[in-house]
View 1 (cartoon, helix red, strand yellow):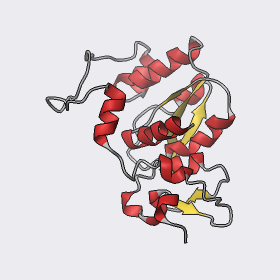
View 2 (view 1 turned 60 degrees about the vertical axis):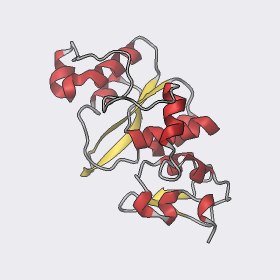
View 3 (view 1 turned 180 degrees about the horizontal axis):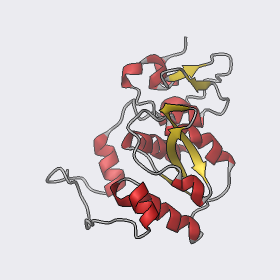
Length: 194
């Protein structure tokens, strides 16, 4: 077997894997899939040892100090649990259907719909419940208002959102992204490389 530094942490150390899907989404040879529990599975025959999956994995070697400096441009830690911020707001969608059908006032759905309708984005990476299995989430590239609306509400289940990165790489356009911190960290690591 190859060295641990060549492969995503989820393949050799599952307890550190957040199942974000980044390794699956960036693998150029599709050597990394998903098992029944949504952990990465590895096809040794397809693997070229490019190390890309290891380099984008948010479960291995995450430096909060580096991240804090890169994202916020600050060396000091925040003074409290709110973190560094410029302003804080309370909001909700002005569209009744979005507000009542969404979570937390439908803010994210409302923002995505506005960005799509005004041409600022061509689509968004979103997550909905898989209609074939209501205990699983399904992430996809939504390009229509209906597809965005289908992803309303919070999902409190594992979702390898970044498996969609392969589709984004092959598509042209500008896309918004809705994800959790571990998923966003995988996306950030990929963006630093590619």
